[in-house]
Image 1 (cartoon, helix red, strand yellow):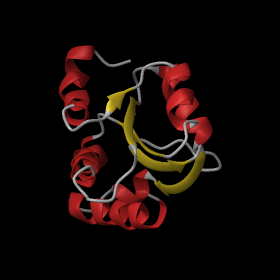
Image 2: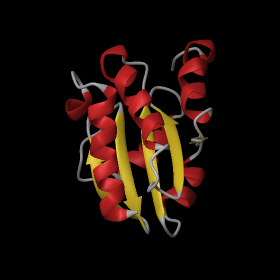
Image 3: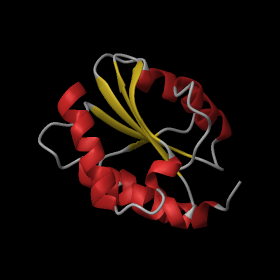
Length: 136
């Protein structure tokens, strides 16, 4: 677990952009299993990947076509919520940061950490935009 003061600005970067911060496994289930589309961002303190993943997720909220909901869980903090989100992301292995798109409770698009590292935020956001065009 990280100190809350350390992760607070990283949480705010997403919540200020309209993401709902999920902190329990029940909240995760409720969000993902809902009808429609939901983007789940597994937030992280990792500077090399999360520093581009968060801006990419933020950028993607501005696209005309986008998910019905944007939610986030924070790796290294709310263990139960993160574990539950990762269960929904199977068969992909645990990854943080990670970005997953669900439609009617089913995983339809996944961006793992190795697809984030070394890529600029706009390139990651473009990947999300393509998924939104297809599924939202």
